[in-house]
Amino acid sequence: MHLSSKDLLGMKELSATEIELILNTADTMKLVLDANSKKTAHLQGKSVITLFYENSTRTRLSFEMASKFMGASSANISASGSSIKKGESLIDTAKTIDSMATDIIIMRHQQSGAPHLIASRINASVINAGDGMNEHPTQALLDMMTMRRHKGTLEGLKVAIIGDLLHSRVARSNLWGLTKMGAEVRLAGPATMVPPGLDQTPAVWCPTVQDAVSDADVVMGLRVQLERQQSGLFPSISEYARFFAIDEKTLSLAKPDALLMHPGPCNHGVEMPTAVYDSPQSVINEQVTNGVAVRMAVLYLLASRRNQA
Ligand code: CP
Image 1 (cartoon, rainbow, N blue to C red):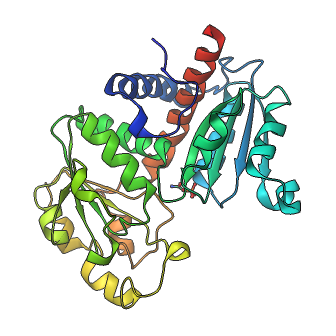
Image 2 (cartoon, helix red, strand yellow; image 1 turned 90 degrees about the horizontal axis):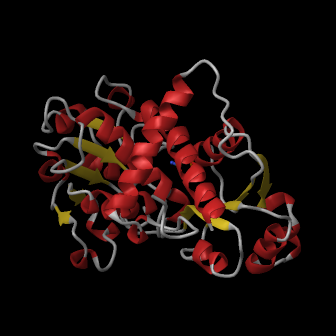
């Protein structure tokens, strides 16, 4: 079985069968990562370019490591060190990279829809590594992989996602992905940070963090995106923390074996205190580990599809 599109642009575009294919492949890739030698030949002869217009530690590094583990020729371009700084357009930049026999471009961009814009104009496969406030599909896939490995299935899970919903591409991707797999997604956060059109999604809106977390199987904090913040969405960081931080008392309302997650990077003391971040329920570092396996799986499946085509 193959992915239906040459690109991975969002969880909204993936079917439940495709999500399951990626998660099953990622479980296999995890076996490779756990082995003594991490080298495979899955991407031998393929070239992979990362093109990041925004900062990243986890996503960029894990894609780079995944490409290297699987034998691809890989390179990275950051906006600050390229002809983007001379005013070259996004489409011209993408076409330039495409003209160098590139198989896969992994792109992060501050504008929602930027990966979709280039994907339809180039031959290379495009992976969305985060576009503005829209989607971050590989983050949702690694979150779902982590949940599935602990809980056995995603079907019927109650997942509480807490915080800055307005700016969060992680929340949006998890909402589409998890509900397609039969999970219940509960959202809570400041009323000023509720994205428009939420009532037209399968999400369950909860008036308080406590309502969302009660009896949940998974509790996920979202980063307060200070770089995307307009003024006035909440009075102060300390007031945000007072009402929306996931502290020990709030976490105790979830199921006793609930997982505590965060996509990172975390503002300690804002989204949650360090004691919760480091608690036995936290799988935050495991999310990072699973991120490499998920990105190996996505790269492998897109490369296989190209071979078939
Ligand atoms: N979660 C996430 O996307 O982290 P980075 O910004 O470090 O890639």
